[in-house]
Image (cartoon, rainbow, N blue to C red; front, side, top):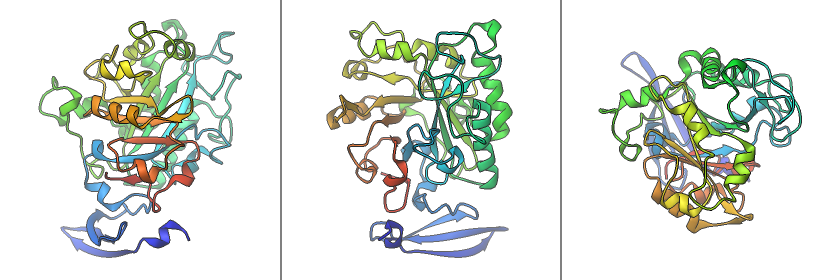
Length: 344
């Protein structure tokens, strides 16, 4: 039986203060409850209670590499299932050989040349992938906030090549316009610009409806591989992210460094107090490590936490944790009682 058939939802329409609302009475786990939702926020993959929760207290199912056709027929289709998606971006047509184009990034997963993805009409550039998100957003007004993770596979190019954070921020602004939720807005939402992420307050999902949050992680696939093997303290990998996020007031994207080992959890390196997102692999040698995950959660309280390689444990179990994003390759099969967004 489809898990969604196990959920009973009654929707009533109420006219209050010149606005229609939906009162959704849902029994996701046997407890009847109601949530007042603005009209339009009727995505049946979103647990109704999640709309009224602070964004950093929500757990989401995320897709891992859903820009590849083997995981999703099209990139835009993935947004029908999850609101946290990922793109791998490269500066050059061939890794380490030749050059790229100004104001342009390629989207693919591996070292192969050019674009290899399901964006646009197929094998689209980064901008075409961004416009897929924009199109979906316009077709679904007041949607649950979308989070886009840009996994950067190469260092930033030289300024003269016009593939620096400045050009990327310009592209994001061109694609998303006022839909883009910027780090500056989060700082302004809080009472002080000097507080640390551990005590940051986030708007509710309803307050962020229709918005798009971009997080840059990665920096270099070579440094990625090398850093994961180096003794603790020798990492320079995440310093590449600082070039994108050093000026929080002017940035159009958040940054989300990778965590490679248990030592970096207990004593983070190269992570400034302004970083609101953190990424970590959920397993070691394809073995799911729950102790590692719990240590990760406890060490980075206040930041939004994303893990990938979570295939060993169903999302229905992990949605009870304080992780914010759990990424799966086969994300469509991980909906929990029909939902991709939960409140732990």
